[in-house]
Structures are given as C-alpha cells and as structure tokens.
Length: 371
Image 1 (cartoon, rainbow, N blue to C red):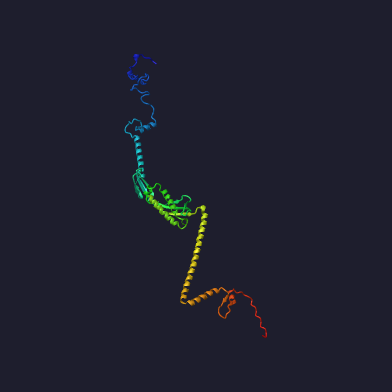
Image 2: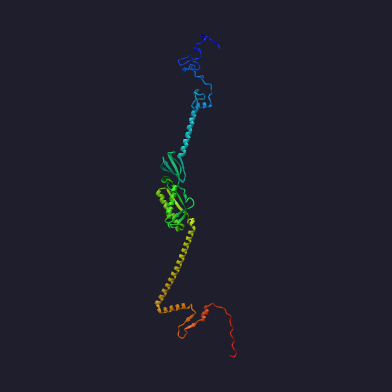
C-alpha cells in the first residue's frame, strides 16, 4: 500500500464517499463507524438494490396486490390478476344466489299434495298442485302434506293388548285404524304430533266402547257395532281437537280370550252352548205340549157343540168311545145284558192279539166203525 501526502489527495467532493454532515460521517456504512446518527440521504447498508431474484411466491403476492410481473405497477396498461379473482368471486356468489333462489322459491306440489305456506313462521296460505312460486327462504317456508293417501295404523304395534270389557272379562284385542288428512292447515298447526295424537285417540275410544260391551258381543256378532261406535267416537274427539283428520274406519283383527285363560274360556263357552241347547229343547217340548192341549181344547169345544144339540146321544157316544178305548187293552169283555154270563173269556181274541206260532198239525182220530 502506497502512502501519499495529505496535499496530494483529491478533495472529498470528488471522492465516492459522502462528506461528513451534521448527521454523521460519510462512507458506505452511512456513518456507522462513527457511532453517530445516520445520514437520511446516505446509501443503506448492503447497497442500493438487492441482487436477489424474486421467488414465485413473491410474484404471486405482487400479482394478488395488483402489481405487474416486475412489481411497481409500471410498464404500460396491464390486466391485474386481482381483478379477475374478484370477478370470479362475484360470478360464484351470483351462481350460489341463483341456485338458492331457484330451490327455495319454486315448489313442485304433487296431485295428491297441498303446500302449507308460512311467512316468517306465520301461516299465510296453501298451494294447490303444480309448480308454484313463492318468496325465497328463510322468509317463506312450504311444507307439503299428502291429503289423498289413506294411512293405516295397527294396534298394538307388536302382539296384542288386554282390554277390560263391561262384564269384567279380559279381552285379547288387535285392530287397525284407517285415516287421512282432511285439512292441511289444522293438521300442521293445531296439534303438535298428529300421528301420535291419532293413535292415542284410537286407543282411548276403543277402551271406552269396550267398557260398555260384554265379552260375548266383543267376540261374537257385536264386532260390527263396536267398530262403528269407535269410529264415531274417534271422529268426535279429533273434531274437538281441530286436528284436520278424517277417520275412514276401524277393523277388529282379533278378539279372543288371553292365551293363559283360553282353556277356562273354552269350558265356559261349552257350558254356555249346552245351556242354550237345553233351553231350546225345553222350549220345543213346551210348544208341543201347548199345541196338544190346544188341539184337545178345540176338540172338546166341538164335542160340546154336539152335546148341546143332542145331549143323550152325545153322552152315550162318549161313553161307548171311552169304554172302547179302555177295553181295547184287555183280554176280557164284560157284557151287562140279561141272559148272558157276566164274564166271558175271549181266547180267540187273545190268540188274535198274540203273535202266531206254527205248530205241527195233529191228525184227527178216525171214527170207530159201527158208530
């Protein structure tokens, strides 16, 4: 290194170093060596421009902020990627809104359905079958109700249930209830759980009717009457509830004695049938006796009429007929005529009444000669 005198050096203004100012000394380090305040116009440490190349992430971030490929936004008219992204977002939001409007504003109501419309949770009307247009959700909500299908509920859900009849007997019962929706508005708004309400009403009505019915009627010919009474009582209760339900009918599938008591019930049934048979036989015999008595009374009336016309002749005729009827069973005949033996055995009559037996014929003895 060559040392030069002080007077041979160039002035500081011509040197690359920045002259020392009031904020510190010059130099490339901006006066950092002097530990003073930095010069605001000094070159920052590390040079004026970084020689490192921007990465792909840096380019993407610059494009997203609206800058060009080289940064700074200079270089003539450009089409920033941020504007395209905003347009894509707007298109996507528009598609979502359109789909939301289509799916919540258009409603297809089937031929057997009715649409119950609520505006902000309040009932506002009904929709008839077809494609209907309403305000979008959540302003308007549409609930579809099937008003044509007949629903069938089986009671009980599994097995059978025991019901107490009016004559304090236990009945093993199973039945079905058919119903449909008549008023969609009442069906949706008036009761909380329509299906369970219908089931509870059916069970209550059936027990109320059977509480006034005997066991014989329940398991016999009284089923039709029970079904009609249960249907009427169910409809009356549901109308009081304003449930919007029409009961189509009730059918009893099984009505018999419980399995544990089936033998006792069979014995009781057999005794009842025997009692009915004996009663029928007694009635038949009484009718026969009455008919015979009535016939005899009619015959007596006729005889009395004849007796009034000819008392002596009728009296003698009655006497003869009576004696004929009495003596017909005897083997003796008593004749009260003068000159005739009072008792005359009738062997011949006895032989005629007795069964005939074949006996070998005995040859008659030959007559003696000379006689």
